[in-house]
Image (cartoon, rainbow, N blue to C red):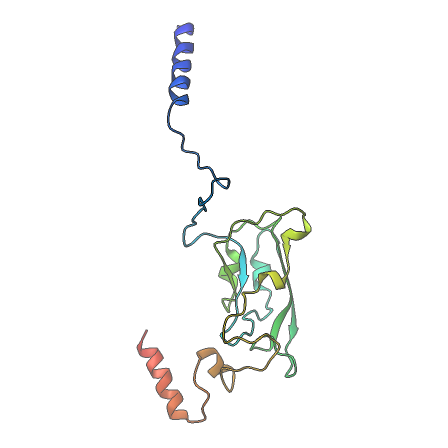
Length: 187
């Protein structure tokens, strides 16, 4: 029995050797870029409002929610001369340590302003440990057409309510009411 069992095992091995392989030749094969699923948890990104101001208000909830203690946030107050976000505060220092991050997404769920999201970027390997601690400048979403580099005053509304609702800059309350009613009817 022992010899037959051994030959049966060798037979399985021999059969497996001559099967077609399922291994993908990544990243060495050109044109074989890996496509991720839409809800893939990749590199983090700090988002911006349409006028270029940062969405992060420096509340530090993402750092509190992180089970791996990979996020460090230091908030500061906005001034009229230097405004980085539309609220009272902004994230002056924002760091994510990818040596600790487990990509669980708890920080995304904790963010009240949807300032922090995860991209589909998964190539995070680097040469040194220091380069895997991402600072705010590497996490911020790039400026697109129509955005202005902060600091600058709010451009989308007269006050915080109109800014966050995206209402037109007008003093006419009837125009604002009709715009709010139209936005509510679409939901």
